[in-house]
Length: 42
Image 1 (cartoon, one colour):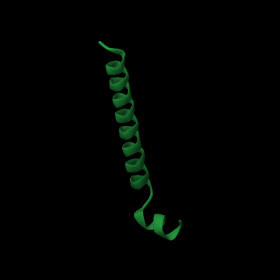
Image 2: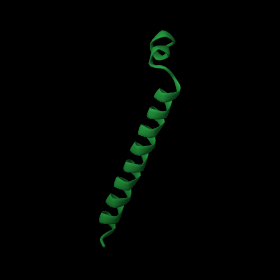
Image 3: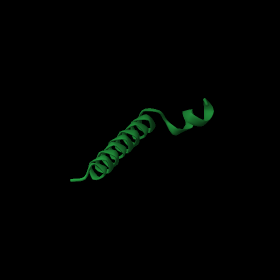
Image 4: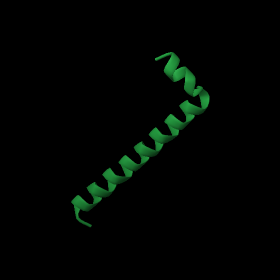
């Protein structure tokens, strides 16, 4: 495989893992803190 293909694949996987971790973190934060507290205590 060409190096550019491996680089592109690694970048895509990295972005995917980062995006998934971010989504899990945001979901966890919203389940731990009530929505009102985000607006009342910025």
